[in-house]
Length: 98
Image 1 (cartoon, rainbow, N blue to C red):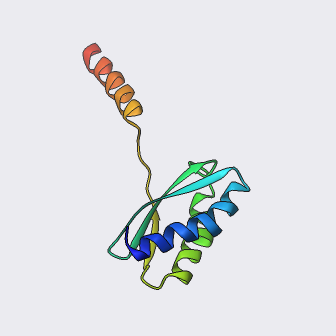
Image 2: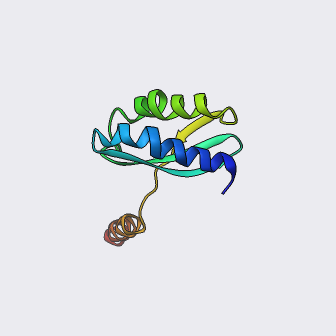
Protein backbone atom coordinates (compact mmCIF):
# COMPACT_ATOMS: atom_id res chain seq x y z
CA UNK A 1 0.00 0.00 0.00
CA UNK A 2 1.37 3.41 -0.97
CA UNK A 3 1.94 6.30 1.42
CA UNK A 4 -1.09 8.15 0.00
CA UNK A 5 -3.28 5.07 0.43
CA UNK A 6 -2.14 4.75 4.04
CA UNK A 7 -3.01 8.42 4.60
CA UNK A 8 -6.44 7.89 3.05
CA UNK A 9 -7.12 4.89 5.30
CA UNK A 10 -5.97 6.85 8.34
CA UNK A 11 -8.24 9.82 7.58
CA UNK A 12 -11.20 7.56 6.84
CA UNK A 13 -10.70 5.66 10.10
CA UNK A 14 -9.92 8.68 12.26
CA UNK A 15 -12.23 11.36 10.92
CA UNK A 16 -14.74 10.29 8.28
CA UNK A 17 -15.93 6.91 9.58
CA UNK A 18 -16.79 8.21 13.08
CA UNK A 19 -19.02 10.90 11.53
CA UNK A 20 -20.85 8.36 9.39
CA UNK A 21 -21.19 5.87 12.26
CA UNK A 22 -23.19 8.50 14.17
CA UNK A 23 -25.90 7.97 11.55
CA UNK A 24 -25.41 4.17 11.28
CA UNK A 25 -23.44 4.51 8.05
CA UNK A 26 -19.96 3.54 7.03
CA UNK A 27 -17.48 3.85 4.18
CA UNK A 28 -14.77 1.62 2.75
CA UNK A 29 -11.71 2.66 0.80
CA UNK A 30 -11.69 0.87 -2.56
CA UNK A 31 -8.76 2.35 -4.50
CA UNK A 32 -6.61 5.34 -5.36
CA UNK A 33 -5.63 5.66 -9.01
CA UNK A 34 -4.92 8.62 -11.29
CA UNK A 35 -5.45 11.03 -8.37
CA UNK A 36 -9.00 9.73 -7.83
CA UNK A 37 -10.14 8.02 -4.63
CA UNK A 38 -12.86 5.43 -4.95
CA UNK A 39 -14.95 4.65 -1.90
CA UNK A 40 -17.96 2.46 -1.21
CA UNK A 41 -20.74 3.54 1.13
CA UNK A 42 -22.04 0.92 3.54
CA UNK A 43 -24.63 0.63 6.27
CA UNK A 44 -27.26 3.36 6.30
CA UNK A 45 -25.23 5.39 3.78
CA UNK A 46 -25.69 2.72 1.13
CA UNK A 47 -28.62 3.87 -0.97
CA UNK A 48 -29.31 6.92 1.21
CA UNK A 49 -30.78 9.89 -0.69
CA UNK A 50 -28.20 12.13 1.02
CA UNK A 51 -25.20 9.99 0.03
CA UNK A 52 -24.10 12.44 -2.69
CA UNK A 53 -24.16 15.30 -0.20
CA UNK A 54 -22.19 13.21 2.29
CA UNK A 55 -19.71 12.34 -0.44
CA UNK A 56 -19.13 16.01 -1.30
CA UNK A 57 -19.33 17.67 2.13
CA UNK A 58 -17.75 15.03 4.34
CA UNK A 59 -15.67 12.52 2.40
CA UNK A 60 -14.33 14.55 -0.53
CA UNK A 61 -13.91 17.80 1.40
CA UNK A 62 -11.94 16.05 4.15
CA UNK A 63 -9.69 13.97 1.90
CA UNK A 64 -8.93 16.70 -0.65
CA UNK A 65 -8.10 19.23 2.07
CA UNK A 66 -5.76 16.78 3.83
CA UNK A 67 -4.03 15.15 0.86
CA UNK A 68 -2.99 17.42 -2.05
CA UNK A 69 -2.45 14.45 -4.41
CA UNK A 70 -6.21 13.80 -4.48
CA UNK A 71 -8.13 15.48 -7.30
CA UNK A 72 -11.50 13.78 -6.84
CA UNK A 73 -13.42 11.27 -4.75
CA UNK A 74 -16.13 9.09 -6.23
CA UNK A 75 -18.48 6.51 -4.76
CA UNK A 76 -18.73 3.16 -6.48
CA UNK A 77 -21.45 0.60 -6.07
CA UNK A 78 -21.06 -3.08 -6.53
CA UNK A 79 -23.71 -5.64 -7.25
CA UNK A 80 -23.30 -8.87 -5.33
CA UNK A 81 -22.88 -12.16 -7.16
CA UNK A 82 -26.05 -13.39 -5.46
CA UNK A 83 -28.09 -10.47 -6.81
CA UNK A 84 -26.66 -10.95 -10.31
CA UNK A 85 -27.57 -14.64 -10.19
CA UNK A 86 -31.14 -13.82 -9.16
CA UNK A 87 -31.44 -11.27 -11.98
CA UNK A 88 -30.21 -13.83 -14.53
CA UNK A 89 -32.78 -16.37 -13.32
CA UNK A 90 -35.60 -13.85 -13.63
CA UNK A 91 -34.50 -12.79 -17.11
CA UNK A 92 -34.16 -16.39 -18.26
CA UNK A 93 -37.68 -17.21 -17.00
CA UNK A 94 -39.06 -14.21 -18.88
CA UNK A 95 -37.27 -15.28 -22.05
CA UNK A 96 -38.60 -18.85 -21.73
CA UNK A 97 -42.21 -17.60 -21.49
CA UNK A 98 -41.99 -15.76 -24.82
